[in-house]
Length: 136
Image (cartoon, rainbow, N blue to C red; front, side, top):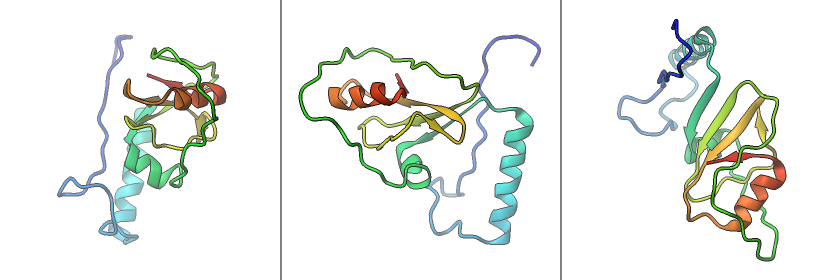
């Protein structure tokens, strides 16, 4: 790309039936070759951000941790929160129901940004702010 405008490249590794990764993927040589090709393309493109849904993030990255929220009512304004960070790359999680149990704001060196809905509890937003995790 020759201009400075942002752009999106969708680099996806999906099953033929479009379902979430499952036991069908296994650890076969074919799957391992596909996974290696996917990671090579990821590196060659120079990806600065990646995005997955809640189910994938929960299964593969947060190990099904549940949010630990402080007791008491904290009223948080429902606006985007951009935490201070030094990252040049980002992990984006789609989590409309506030189910992911974040313990820190970085993952594999990437600053985490979570995409929420306006219906998430204030206590969850307070938790994300406390650990320095950005949300929109």
